[in-house]
Amino acid sequence: MGKPIPVATGGGVSMKGPLLSFSLVESSHNGTYRCEVSNTFGSMNLDSSLIIASLPSVSIEPKKKIVKLGQSVELKCRVPSLSVASQITYVVSNAAVIWYRKNRCKTN
Image (cartoon, rainbow, N blue to C red; front, side, top):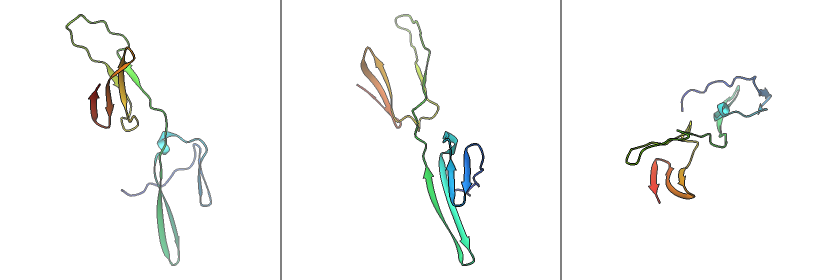
């Protein structure tokens, strides 16, 4: 882990004594927070990981494509961060054909 960056308050983040508060959690708040405490006898620090859970964001391109028999075609499922999407499945006529999970593809 690199050098900690001080937490900027404002924009829904505030600090009251030892309490760091988030009034409206955003994906940018995701990360490891370090609490550093010191007095005349020494110092100590502990880390806490804040993991923001959210629904995945996705789009597909093209939305509609007409191709001739024998041509090749690609459909692209766009996910801003594959670390957020644990699985991507392509379905045709209600039958799953291909799924993706953590750098592995499989066909049914």
